Amino acid sequence: MRSVGEGGVVWLGGGMEVIDAAAVRQVLDPGALVAALREAFAEPGRVVVPEREHYPVDEALEATLLVMPAWQRGGFVGVKVVGHFPQNRGRGIPGLFGSYLLSSATTGEPVAVLDGTELTRWRTAAASALAADSLAPATVGEHLLVGAGNVAAAIPACYAAVREVGLTRVWSRTPAGAEDLVARLRAEGRPAEVAPDLREAVRRADVITAATSATSPLVLGEDVTPGTHVDLIGAFTPTMVEADPALITSASVFVDVPEALHEAGDLTGPLRDGILQESDILADLSALAAGHHPGRRTPEEVTVFKSVGTALEDLVAAGLVWEAWSGARTDLQ
Image (cartoon, rainbow, N blue to C red; front, side, top):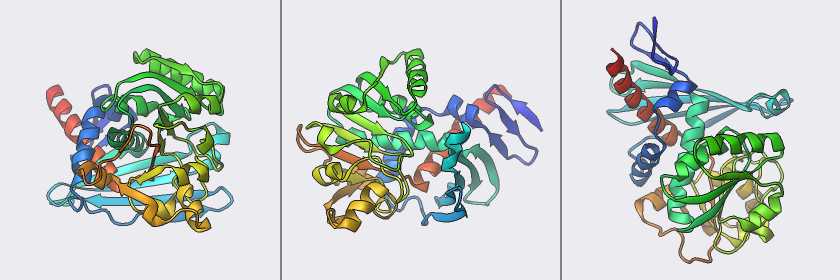
């Protein structure tokens, strides 16, 4: 066993590699990931994605284990295992931890184990950017990030693949978190500032991306101005919600996958209450990527993209990381 490069990759004797978070960040190109997801979503059936499994680990902790497999014939088989422990926020550690096992779909031989948490944040941000390419206004003067966690931090780099953004503003329940993310974005050369008042920031924004674990609405329909695009990418269970029903029922709503209608609290609540119908959902990400739905139709339209994530995104991202790292490893030999 020996280490290779600065990314923290360990090359194992059997040919399998352990690729840590630093290595994922080192080799994953956000623009390439958005392009790869566009191709994969545009060809439904190319990747086989069974329904994800949810297992309650500890009801007192509200802890859940998610198992997400996917495969492509002649390519890779991948399985992500994610632990969602929302009470970790009180411990000062992330609420999500994951690992990803990538294997050959031809022989079944394990190829790599990747940091699933890092993989998840980039594929989530890239899918959001892919949707925004069809749904966001052409000119984005201000992009508001609601939340300052790891997923929010990946959003600007992925958005840069589809839109020029004038200013990124960051709001967080924890002001220090917003300040830290603003400092990171400025270090990347992106204009950024803290948004001290959430409702005022929502009224100003051209695009709003909510990436939180909220259980009560943060983005209110009465504050969203005509022409705005809203990403709701943090809440992925029926008990989590980032927007109020007024926004959901007045906007043009799109989802990443049909499962979002049964998994995301932003949608399950209005559907349960009868103020939203499944037929009100205009399209999923496959239809947008393939051009079967035009996306934004008028400059004044308010669009909402609600995502819960899919194993397709994980498999595509893991394959890109593996290919990029394989090339880097070869150069080092």
